[in-house]
Length: 96
Image (cartoon, rainbow, N blue to C red; front, side):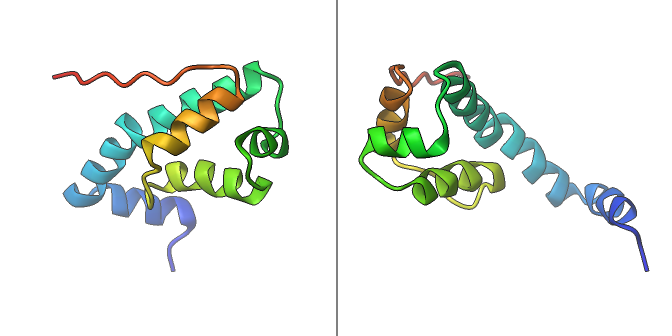
């Protein structure tokens, strides 16, 4: 039986897995980093962000977790609410 680290190493050798991890790192992880940075700079907990968004803390936790796993892409409206809750504005930029 493989250890966790050995399993990860084995999986990362598969082209499809490596490509997906790289995609997540470029897209979802970058977005998650920006959102978490905004929340931390604002000195807010997930519950405080949720209150400002007009939702519940588990919804904010799910949003952050969804970006970390790449299983769900939040709507622009949700991202805008999160940004506003942290005292920020959302900008979208398309690059080559």
